[in-house]
Image (cartoon, rainbow over all chains, first blue to last red; front, top):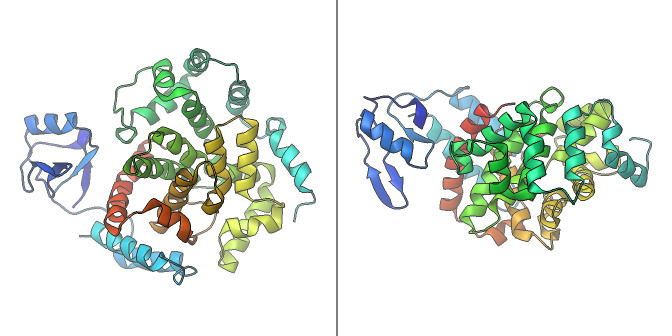
Length: 97
Length: 278
């Protein structure tokens, strides 16, 4: 599920996540983009939307998580660092969905 | 350890313009930013006269992330919108980091990512001076650049040592250079007559609990620095995440949900940094 910059959107692409402003859903998930919708999205102050399809990550997931362990190895027992690592880990895993 | 006491080191840093490796743009810029009488109009004119500088500044302020996507078409407009302090910060940022890609690959990405993330957090916390916090994030590691310019060989050795000893570069700079990059950056910020809050963020971004005049701004840049490293974005001299200062983190009162959202927003900032690579 890649995030595509607003100037690279093309008609026919499918939204993998809703486009929201605050708590209001402007375009729901699975909306198929048209020229008009793309223009509307480009007028909103956002820089990209999530589109269905495989995302491109530079390194395999296992390697990304191993690097995360190495970065945190000196500070895991310090206050809040375990929580932070957990959140970053979930975030990185999310990039590979 | 370099053979120099802290006073001589400070004098050397303050006379940075005498270094042969300092790019001419920075020399011209430091003349502008050291002059407290200079008007916004003159700063705008100075930028307009340098096409490369104009392009970089406009690219930065027009990026979707900055909040004026595509709306600023001239250096004078940017100068008026951002004000003297912020524009001076951006000027130093774009001109200093340019020569960094060889010496420390990834420091520009780290600094720009930190600027964007800091600005996001400042907005989230309802601060009015979020553009100032952006400039602070951009320049927080400027002391590292100065150290590399002044002592290229010794700084590379310190970086290797940090990696071998499993410590951050900030933890061992003091052993090699009498002062660390936070001190050195703040000396320069003082000489350049940067605002009090910007000087404090640079000086205390590793010891945010010591900041008196800008505790929130300093805590924000401290956390942004750590989040960038935690997420493996950019490079700042060593491959490790520094520990969070608990008091500073508590000042910010960020929930796990806040942090999740910030991590998402940072991902966007990475795309922007790619666009803005110098």
